[in-house]
Image (tube, rainbow, N blue to C red):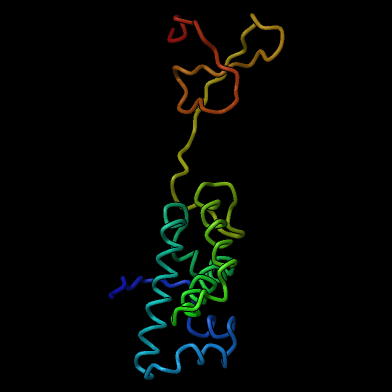
Length: 166
């Protein structure tokens, strides 16, 4: 099985080893040769990076994600989970893996934002034209939907004004 080699990766062999512990990490791979260990680590690192990219690459820049401790920790949990389930075991980090996927899903939906990272794309400028409509006792400020770019919020809209273009 071949994996895409990403330009930026979000975890490393050292980070995975620190999470599991050096003796525990080598125990999971003691049946592999040194070259195969390197190949296997590369596969799980690329898989963890691909999983994070699947959720977050549309919102965040990979260069920024590579330097984010939040992203690196989640990618490390994904890789450690795959490492520990290698021999048919259920995986030591199953609950953490599920939690990480839930957090990535929430981040991709915009429910949470990654600490310290700014969105890189998808943030379009919004222009709203407001008028003061004296016909209303309260909420006199109204958004003119015909000449505004985004009217999907909770603002009060102005309707029924065919002369608005004048």
